[in-house]
Length: 84
Image (cartoon, rainbow, N blue to C red; front, side):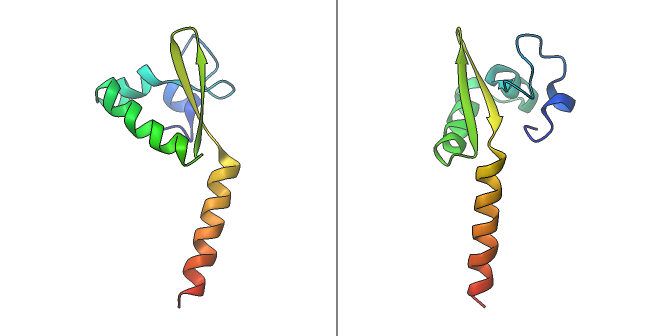
């Protein structure tokens, strides 16, 4: 969902979902999961540096880190290629 935030969260009015990120509360609602569950999973993605999280007032906004994801996929492809 974070790959296409405008399509998935275009109705977010608190901040531009592409430029600023998507509110964690909206992510939880879209997934139909509790806020703590989603927060836990998003924290794993943050620690892996696949997403960035910005806080604004009492909300947190998530955005994909495309460069980090591309670096990881490139590394993974190289690593898998060397295991043959």
